[in-house]
Length: 101
Image (tube, rainbow, N blue to C red; front, side, top):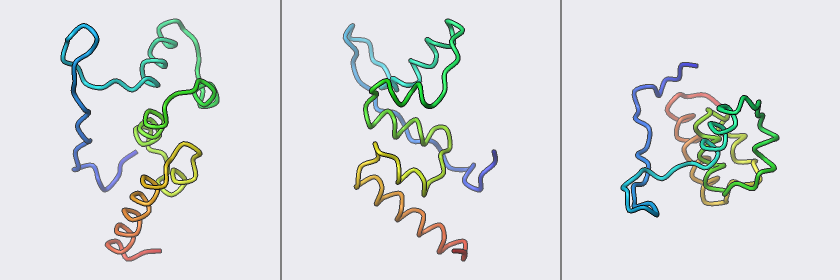
């Protein structure tokens, strides 16, 4: 999928100390879950992820990483009001710049 925003950088992940005092990027537990299952040859779908009880932050980030439709993103049960408002504001700005509805 090619988007007109390809020239924009992805946001930097937070960095901190882990339990062994190693400096690491903050992991996304869903990505770790998927990698672990893939290494074991276990197929995984979105329903498998939904029932695992991941944090709202990891779920929101994962939806963004896989290119979820922005307006549908706001309808997801784990998206908080502040994030939804920010996404909707961004959608309106893009619509205004692109002159479409």
